[in-house]
Structures are given as structure tokens and as C-alpha cells.
Length: 114
Image 1: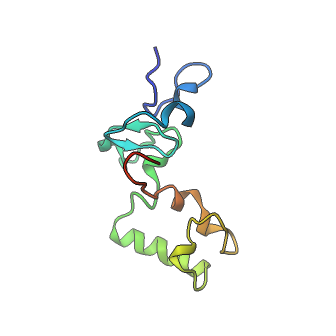
Image 2: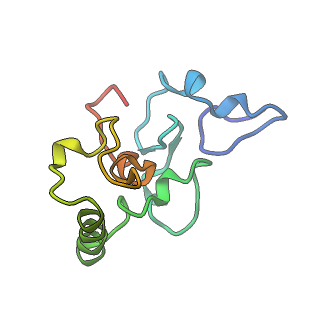
């Protein structure tokens, strides 16, 4: 029997790992972007444990040096962009980088939501 919302698509149709199946499942570890839940120790271990790879997001896993480089690259591509315009659903940068899933997928929601 497949495990519901454990980060791995099981079964022929993979419906055990979709938002509609996972959004109400409590998670005491790391919640994947689509709603699945994995053990917190698996986050940023260089192995994709969430099928959507959200546990290895480059912004989520960056250290202080790396995050500064990533943010500098972003600001260089988006002149004078205010942080309130990042992940707001509107592409303000030439290439839409301010709405990229790698940045916006790191947003943390209030407890009980995602």
C-alpha cells in the first residue's frame, strides 16, 4: 500500500502525492511545495526527497555566502526591485526571475497553511 504524501510518487497514477491529497495532512518535518511531508533531516542533503525537488531548492539550502551571491545575481537582473515585488505574481524583471519557483518556493507560510 502506498504511503500518502511521503515525498515519493507510489502506484500507477501517483495520486498519493498531489496537492488535493496532501494539503490537509499534518507535517512535523519539512513540507514539500506540493504538500507532501518528509523528515526534516532530509532537507538540503543533496538528494531530491520531495518529487518536486523543493527540499533541495537553491535558495532554501544556501549558506550566508551563497545566498548573498544568489540575491546579488537577482538584483543585478532586476534594477531597483523592491522586495515586496518579489513573488507577488507579477513578473517585474526582464526574464521574470522575480517570480521563479526557486525563489518563491522557499516562502514559509503560517502554521496550518501553505
